Length: 370
Image: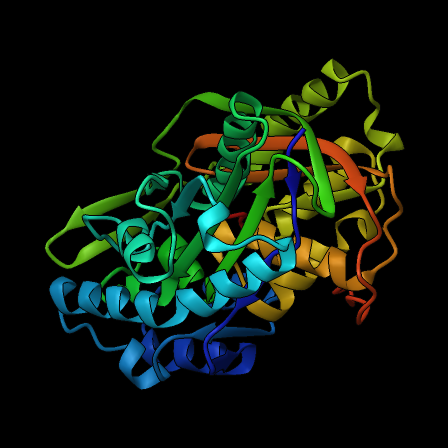
Protein backbone atom coordinates (compact mmCIF):
# COMPACT_ATOMS: atom_id res chain seq x y z
CA UNK A 1 0.00 0.00 0.00
CA UNK A 2 1.15 3.53 -0.76
CA UNK A 3 2.39 5.86 1.99
CA UNK A 4 1.84 9.62 1.91
CA UNK A 5 4.99 11.09 3.39
CA UNK A 6 5.61 14.37 5.19
CA UNK A 7 4.69 17.39 3.04
CA UNK A 8 6.80 20.46 2.46
CA UNK A 9 4.96 23.80 2.53
CA UNK A 10 6.07 27.35 1.75
CA UNK A 11 4.26 30.69 1.73
CA UNK A 12 5.32 34.07 0.30
CA UNK A 13 6.75 36.81 2.51
CA UNK A 14 4.06 39.43 2.00
CA UNK A 15 1.44 39.21 4.76
CA UNK A 16 -2.00 40.77 5.04
CA UNK A 17 -3.79 40.66 8.39
CA UNK A 18 -7.48 40.48 9.18
CA UNK A 19 -7.40 44.10 10.34
CA UNK A 20 -5.84 45.25 7.05
CA UNK A 21 -8.37 43.23 5.07
CA UNK A 22 -11.31 44.80 6.89
CA UNK A 23 -9.92 48.31 6.49
CA UNK A 24 -9.37 47.79 2.76
CA UNK A 25 -12.92 46.52 2.41
CA UNK A 26 -14.26 49.58 4.23
CA UNK A 27 -12.26 51.98 2.06
CA UNK A 28 -12.69 50.24 -1.29
CA UNK A 29 -16.39 49.46 -0.96
CA UNK A 30 -17.64 52.35 1.18
CA UNK A 31 -20.89 52.61 -0.80
CA UNK A 32 -21.61 48.90 -1.18
CA UNK A 33 -25.21 48.22 -0.08
CA UNK A 34 -24.19 45.01 1.72
CA UNK A 35 -20.88 46.22 3.13
CA UNK A 36 -21.91 45.43 6.71
CA UNK A 37 -22.70 41.83 5.81
CA UNK A 38 -19.45 41.45 3.89
CA UNK A 39 -17.37 42.83 6.78
CA UNK A 40 -19.09 40.49 9.24
CA UNK A 41 -18.56 37.45 7.03
CA UNK A 42 -14.88 38.27 6.52
CA UNK A 43 -14.36 38.81 10.24
CA UNK A 44 -16.04 35.52 11.08
CA UNK A 45 -13.80 33.49 8.76
CA UNK A 46 -11.30 33.39 11.62
CA UNK A 47 -8.48 34.09 9.16
CA UNK A 48 -5.94 36.17 11.06
CA UNK A 49 -3.16 36.30 8.44
CA UNK A 50 -2.66 35.43 4.78
CA UNK A 51 0.45 35.36 2.60
CA UNK A 52 0.49 36.81 -0.92
CA UNK A 53 3.10 36.86 -3.71
CA UNK A 54 2.98 40.63 -4.24
CA UNK A 55 2.69 43.63 -1.93
CA UNK A 56 -0.95 44.49 -1.34
CA UNK A 57 -0.79 47.67 -3.44
CA UNK A 58 0.30 45.59 -6.44
CA UNK A 59 -2.26 42.87 -5.72
CA UNK A 60 -5.09 45.40 -5.84
CA UNK A 61 -4.07 46.57 -9.32
CA UNK A 62 -5.19 44.56 -12.35
CA UNK A 63 -2.60 44.80 -15.15
CA UNK A 64 -4.50 42.32 -17.33
CA UNK A 65 -4.79 38.56 -17.56
CA UNK A 66 -1.67 38.15 -19.72
CA UNK A 67 0.58 40.00 -17.27
CA UNK A 68 -0.87 38.15 -14.30
CA UNK A 69 -0.40 34.77 -15.93
CA UNK A 70 3.23 35.60 -16.75
CA UNK A 71 3.69 36.46 -13.08
CA UNK A 72 2.08 33.14 -12.10
CA UNK A 73 4.58 31.24 -14.27
CA UNK A 74 7.57 33.22 -13.02
CA UNK A 75 6.62 32.83 -9.36
CA UNK A 76 5.93 29.12 -9.78
CA UNK A 77 9.33 28.50 -11.36
CA UNK A 78 11.06 30.57 -8.67
CA UNK A 79 9.32 28.99 -5.67
CA UNK A 80 8.38 25.39 -6.47
CA UNK A 81 11.86 23.77 -6.75
CA UNK A 82 12.86 24.41 -3.12
CA UNK A 83 9.56 22.97 -1.89
CA UNK A 84 9.99 19.92 -4.12
CA UNK A 85 13.54 19.30 -2.90
CA UNK A 86 12.39 19.38 0.72
CA UNK A 87 9.49 17.00 0.02
CA UNK A 88 11.88 14.56 -1.66
CA UNK A 89 14.20 14.79 1.33
CA UNK A 90 11.32 14.12 3.74
CA UNK A 91 10.47 10.98 1.78
CA UNK A 92 14.14 9.96 1.38
CA UNK A 93 13.91 9.63 -2.40
CA UNK A 94 15.85 11.18 -5.27
CA UNK A 95 14.36 12.86 -8.36
CA UNK A 96 15.27 9.90 -10.57
CA UNK A 97 13.21 7.61 -8.30
CA UNK A 98 9.97 9.49 -9.07
CA UNK A 99 7.70 7.76 -11.60
CA UNK A 100 4.81 10.25 -11.77
CA UNK A 101 4.46 13.97 -11.04
CA UNK A 102 0.96 15.21 -10.22
CA UNK A 103 0.72 19.00 -10.48
CA UNK A 104 -2.38 20.73 -9.13
CA UNK A 105 -3.27 24.39 -9.47
CA UNK A 106 -6.37 26.43 -10.28
CA UNK A 107 -4.90 29.95 -10.15
CA UNK A 108 -2.87 30.15 -13.36
CA UNK A 109 -2.34 28.33 -16.64
CA UNK A 110 0.72 26.85 -18.35
CA UNK A 111 1.02 24.57 -21.36
CA UNK A 112 3.25 22.61 -21.29
CA UNK A 113 2.47 22.13 -17.63
CA UNK A 114 5.00 23.00 -14.95
CA UNK A 115 5.62 19.25 -14.79
CA UNK A 116 7.58 19.44 -18.06
CA UNK A 117 9.72 22.27 -16.71
CA UNK A 118 10.37 20.35 -13.48
CA UNK A 119 11.47 17.25 -15.38
CA UNK A 120 13.86 19.30 -17.49
CA UNK A 121 15.18 21.36 -14.58
CA UNK A 122 15.43 19.11 -11.53
CA UNK A 123 16.85 15.77 -12.59
CA UNK A 124 13.68 13.76 -13.05
CA UNK A 125 13.85 11.02 -15.71
CA UNK A 126 12.47 11.81 -19.19
CA UNK A 127 10.20 8.78 -18.71
CA UNK A 128 8.50 10.38 -15.70
CA UNK A 129 4.76 10.48 -16.25
CA UNK A 130 2.89 13.78 -15.95
CA UNK A 131 -0.59 14.43 -14.58
CA UNK A 132 -1.63 18.11 -14.37
CA UNK A 133 -4.96 18.73 -12.61
CA UNK A 134 -6.35 22.22 -13.20
CA UNK A 135 -10.11 22.21 -12.78
CA UNK A 136 -10.91 20.59 -9.44
CA UNK A 137 -10.18 23.71 -7.42
CA UNK A 138 -9.73 23.10 -3.71
CA UNK A 139 -10.66 19.42 -4.09
CA UNK A 140 -7.53 18.87 -6.19
CA UNK A 141 -5.31 18.26 -3.15
CA UNK A 142 -7.40 15.24 -2.20
CA UNK A 143 -7.68 14.17 -5.84
CA UNK A 144 -3.89 14.27 -6.24
CA UNK A 145 -3.46 12.00 -3.23
CA UNK A 146 -6.07 9.59 -4.59
CA UNK A 147 -4.59 9.46 -8.09
CA UNK A 148 -1.16 8.85 -6.56
CA UNK A 149 -2.65 6.01 -4.54
CA UNK A 150 -4.28 4.56 -7.67
CA UNK A 151 -0.97 4.73 -9.54
CA UNK A 152 0.92 2.99 -6.73
CA UNK A 153 -1.80 0.33 -6.58
CA UNK A 154 -1.20 -0.37 -10.28
CA UNK A 155 2.60 -0.08 -9.89
CA UNK A 156 3.36 -1.17 -6.29
CA UNK A 157 7.02 -0.09 -6.28
CA UNK A 158 6.41 3.34 -7.84
CA UNK A 159 6.90 6.75 -6.24
CA UNK A 160 4.70 9.77 -6.98
CA UNK A 161 5.51 13.42 -6.39
CA UNK A 162 2.55 15.74 -5.76
CA UNK A 163 3.00 19.50 -6.24
CA UNK A 164 0.35 22.09 -5.37
CA UNK A 165 0.91 25.70 -6.43
CA UNK A 166 -1.83 28.17 -5.58
CA UNK A 167 -1.46 31.94 -6.03
CA UNK A 168 -5.05 32.88 -5.24
CA UNK A 169 -4.18 36.57 -4.95
CA UNK A 170 -3.49 36.66 -8.69
CA UNK A 171 -7.20 35.99 -9.25
CA UNK A 172 -8.34 39.17 -7.50
CA UNK A 173 -10.94 40.98 -9.59
CA UNK A 174 -11.58 44.57 -8.42
CA UNK A 175 -14.82 44.88 -10.43
CA UNK A 176 -16.48 41.80 -8.89
CA UNK A 177 -18.80 43.19 -6.21
CA UNK A 178 -20.97 40.19 -5.32
CA UNK A 179 -20.99 39.15 -1.67
CA UNK A 180 -19.35 35.82 -2.51
CA UNK A 181 -16.54 37.53 -4.45
CA UNK A 182 -15.92 40.08 -1.70
CA UNK A 183 -15.86 37.32 0.90
CA UNK A 184 -13.28 35.41 -1.12
CA UNK A 185 -11.10 38.55 -1.18
CA UNK A 186 -10.78 38.20 2.59
CA UNK A 187 -10.43 34.43 2.70
CA UNK A 188 -7.94 33.11 0.15
CA UNK A 189 -4.16 33.03 0.51
CA UNK A 190 -1.14 31.86 -1.49
CA UNK A 191 0.97 28.76 -0.85
CA UNK A 192 3.10 26.08 -2.47
CA UNK A 193 3.24 22.52 -1.17
CA UNK A 194 4.64 19.16 -2.19
CA UNK A 195 4.58 15.60 -0.91
CA UNK A 196 5.74 12.19 -2.03
CA UNK A 197 3.60 9.07 -2.08
CA UNK A 198 5.85 6.01 -1.83
CA UNK A 199 4.73 2.61 -3.07
CA UNK A 200 7.16 0.96 -0.66
CA UNK A 201 8.55 2.30 2.61
CA UNK A 202 8.16 5.74 4.05
CA UNK A 203 6.74 7.30 7.20
CA UNK A 204 3.29 8.83 7.15
CA UNK A 205 -0.23 7.80 6.22
CA UNK A 206 -0.48 4.45 4.47
CA UNK A 207 -3.53 4.81 2.27
CA UNK A 208 -5.86 1.82 2.27
CA UNK A 209 -8.90 3.12 0.40
CA UNK A 210 -9.96 6.21 -1.52
CA UNK A 211 -13.19 7.51 -2.97
CA UNK A 212 -14.80 10.38 -4.84
CA UNK A 213 -18.30 11.76 -4.46
CA UNK A 214 -20.10 14.33 -6.61
CA UNK A 215 -23.27 15.98 -5.30
CA UNK A 216 -25.65 15.85 -8.30
CA UNK A 217 -26.67 19.07 -10.03
CA UNK A 218 -24.39 21.39 -8.07
CA UNK A 219 -21.77 22.16 -10.71
CA UNK A 220 -22.71 25.85 -10.78
CA UNK A 221 -22.41 26.35 -7.00
CA UNK A 222 -18.63 26.95 -7.06
CA UNK A 223 -17.11 27.87 -10.39
CA UNK A 224 -14.90 30.13 -12.48
CA UNK A 225 -16.18 32.42 -15.18
CA UNK A 226 -13.33 32.86 -17.69
CA UNK A 227 -13.38 36.39 -19.11
CA UNK A 228 -11.00 38.85 -20.76
CA UNK A 229 -9.70 39.83 -17.33
CA UNK A 230 -9.05 36.23 -16.25
CA UNK A 231 -10.67 33.89 -13.75
CA UNK A 232 -13.70 35.22 -11.89
CA UNK A 233 -14.69 33.23 -8.81
CA UNK A 234 -18.41 32.43 -8.60
CA UNK A 235 -19.99 31.35 -5.31
CA UNK A 236 -23.63 30.33 -4.91
CA UNK A 237 -25.61 31.16 -1.77
CA UNK A 238 -26.49 27.46 -1.38
CA UNK A 239 -22.89 26.51 -0.62
CA UNK A 240 -23.36 26.72 3.20
CA UNK A 241 -25.27 23.41 3.03
CA UNK A 242 -22.36 21.55 1.46
CA UNK A 243 -21.29 19.44 4.43
CA UNK A 244 -24.80 18.21 5.12
CA UNK A 245 -24.63 16.57 1.69
CA UNK A 246 -20.99 15.42 1.82
CA UNK A 247 -20.70 14.12 5.37
CA UNK A 248 -22.76 10.98 4.53
CA UNK A 249 -20.32 10.22 1.70
CA UNK A 250 -17.41 10.38 4.16
CA UNK A 251 -19.25 8.07 6.53
CA UNK A 252 -20.02 5.67 3.68
CA UNK A 253 -16.36 5.38 2.62
CA UNK A 254 -15.31 4.71 6.21
CA UNK A 255 -18.05 2.10 6.60
CA UNK A 256 -16.96 0.35 3.39
CA UNK A 257 -13.64 -0.17 5.13
CA UNK A 258 -15.40 -1.63 8.19
CA UNK A 259 -14.36 1.35 10.31
CA UNK A 260 -16.36 3.78 12.42
CA UNK A 261 -15.88 7.55 12.16
CA UNK A 262 -16.01 7.92 15.94
CA UNK A 263 -13.11 5.49 16.34
CA UNK A 264 -10.71 7.28 13.97
CA UNK A 265 -7.69 9.10 15.36
CA UNK A 266 -7.07 12.04 13.02
CA UNK A 267 -8.82 14.06 10.34
CA UNK A 268 -7.15 16.23 7.69
CA UNK A 269 -9.81 18.07 5.71
CA UNK A 270 -10.01 21.07 3.42
CA UNK A 271 -10.86 24.17 5.43
CA UNK A 272 -12.57 26.37 2.88
CA UNK A 273 -14.13 28.32 5.74
CA UNK A 274 -15.05 27.74 9.39
CA UNK A 275 -18.54 26.57 8.47
CA UNK A 276 -17.05 23.46 6.84
CA UNK A 277 -15.28 22.47 10.05
CA UNK A 278 -18.19 23.38 12.32
CA UNK A 279 -20.64 21.39 10.19
CA UNK A 280 -18.35 18.36 10.05
CA UNK A 281 -18.24 18.37 13.85
CA UNK A 282 -22.04 18.32 13.85
CA UNK A 283 -22.76 15.84 11.06
CA UNK A 284 -19.96 13.44 11.98
CA UNK A 285 -20.55 13.90 15.73
CA UNK A 286 -16.92 14.75 16.42
CA UNK A 287 -15.34 17.24 18.85
CA UNK A 288 -13.74 20.40 17.37
CA UNK A 289 -10.31 19.19 18.49
CA UNK A 290 -10.36 16.57 15.72
CA UNK A 291 -10.09 19.35 13.13
CA UNK A 292 -7.45 21.44 14.91
CA UNK A 293 -4.87 21.11 12.13
CA UNK A 294 -7.24 22.33 9.42
CA UNK A 295 -8.45 25.11 11.72
CA UNK A 296 -4.87 26.28 12.32
CA UNK A 297 -4.20 26.37 8.58
CA UNK A 298 -7.29 28.49 8.01
CA UNK A 299 -6.37 30.86 10.83
CA UNK A 300 -2.74 31.41 9.90
CA UNK A 301 -2.83 31.12 6.11
CA UNK A 302 -6.44 31.40 4.99
CA UNK A 303 -7.98 29.16 2.36
CA UNK A 304 -4.93 28.11 0.34
CA UNK A 305 -7.01 26.00 -2.06
CA UNK A 306 -5.52 22.61 -2.96
CA UNK A 307 -2.60 23.16 -0.54
CA UNK A 308 -4.82 23.16 2.56
CA UNK A 309 -4.71 19.39 3.08
CA UNK A 310 -0.91 19.33 2.78
CA UNK A 311 -0.44 22.23 5.19
CA UNK A 312 -2.79 20.62 7.71
CA UNK A 313 -1.02 17.27 7.29
CA UNK A 314 2.34 18.95 7.88
CA UNK A 315 0.94 20.25 11.18
CA UNK A 316 -0.01 16.71 12.16
CA UNK A 317 3.61 15.70 11.57
CA UNK A 318 4.82 18.72 13.56
CA UNK A 319 2.68 17.82 16.54
CA UNK A 320 4.47 14.47 16.72
CA UNK A 321 1.84 12.64 18.78
CA UNK A 322 0.21 10.33 16.24
CA UNK A 323 0.90 6.67 17.00
CA UNK A 324 1.82 3.84 14.66
CA UNK A 325 -1.36 2.17 13.44
CA UNK A 326 -3.61 5.20 14.09
CA UNK A 327 -6.47 5.47 11.62
CA UNK A 328 -7.23 8.69 9.79
CA UNK A 329 -9.02 10.44 6.96
CA UNK A 330 -7.97 13.07 4.41
CA UNK A 331 -10.61 14.92 2.39
CA UNK A 332 -10.58 17.72 -0.15
CA UNK A 333 -13.77 19.58 -1.09
CA UNK A 334 -14.36 21.74 -4.13
CA UNK A 335 -16.30 22.50 -7.30
CA UNK A 336 -18.70 19.93 -8.52
CA UNK A 337 -19.65 19.86 -5.58
CA UNK A 338 -16.93 17.22 -5.14
CA UNK A 339 -15.29 15.39 -2.25
CA UNK A 340 -12.04 13.45 -2.72
CA UNK A 341 -11.37 11.28 0.32
CA UNK A 342 -8.69 8.84 1.44
CA UNK A 343 -8.47 6.73 4.60
CA UNK A 344 -5.59 4.75 6.03
CA UNK A 345 -3.27 4.05 8.94
CA UNK A 346 -0.18 5.80 10.24
CA UNK A 347 3.13 4.07 9.62
CA UNK A 348 6.09 4.92 11.84
CA UNK A 349 6.42 7.72 14.36
CA UNK A 350 5.95 11.31 13.26
CA UNK A 351 8.96 13.55 13.90
CA UNK A 352 8.53 15.60 17.04
CA UNK A 353 8.13 19.32 16.54
CA UNK A 354 6.22 22.37 17.59
CA UNK A 355 2.67 21.57 18.59
CA UNK A 356 0.08 23.13 16.29
CA UNK A 357 -2.27 25.52 18.08
CA UNK A 358 -5.96 25.24 17.25
CA UNK A 359 -7.93 28.40 16.57
CA UNK A 360 -11.16 29.04 18.45
CA UNK A 361 -14.46 28.30 16.77
CA UNK A 362 -15.99 31.47 15.34
CA UNK A 363 -19.31 32.49 16.86
CA UNK A 364 -20.86 33.11 13.46
CA UNK A 365 -19.59 30.91 10.65
CA UNK A 366 -18.99 32.32 7.21
CA UNK A 367 -19.80 30.67 3.92
CA UNK A 368 -17.58 27.63 3.18
CA UNK A 369 -15.60 28.01 -0.02
CA UNK A 370 -14.15 25.19 -2.09
